[in-house]
Length: 272
Picture 1 (cartoon, rainbow, N blue to C red):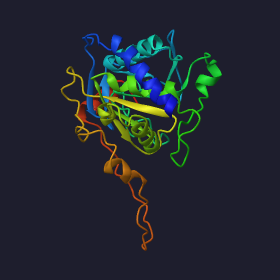
Picture 2 (picture 1 turned 90 degrees about the vertical axis):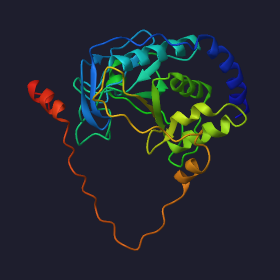
Picture 3 (picture 1 turned 30 degrees about the vertical axis):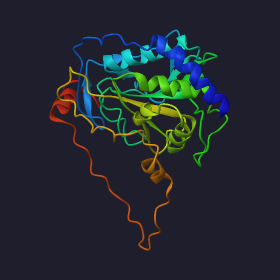
Picture 4 (picture 1 turned 60 degrees about the vertical axis):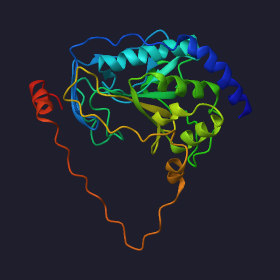
């Protein structure tokens, strides 16, 4: 832990020297609807690059709004300048967005503004088999305790990922948030507001951008609570639920109906 704290001080001084952001690209793309019920027009495909590779968790899940592609490219560039290993990028969205299907664990990733960044790295470079049969590297275990992979590189990657002003949330396992709060004790923790605990997410961070200016039909998510989230809010994730004497009834989730514009877009393109 002391090594990580020392690394923070050195890393911050290096990072601040190149933490400016280029102007966002002007595009004709549009994100429509909600993050968990919508679609996207004009999505751009993310292909393997010089300092990153794209994992294939499913077919054609590597499309995003140009703002998201720009965000990923800038994150890759900053990681490279900071001396981090090459990055591994997971799921974005499908070509027209929409649901990944009932077999997927993803509820969101539907409007081209979500991306999973693996806690594994692409150094050494992955084979095509490894990219199409990806395996997670967990930085906390099933009891939310840090593993040996919770190191300087992952802390730096999380920090850099949160610095872009377009980022609204970064979902990670509760134990990751807790460990970051401990590491940054005595340092500036304001950036941790964007780091939100959520179930799963032990092997990757889920980065979510806010609605772009070119997307008036994009439904904005409520702002995250103020503060760094390291107090009672975080502690609540580690409180076991009270025992129930009533047998649990299976909850049937109502089927989501996509926005009318998305339905028309899907129909026009024979998109399932």
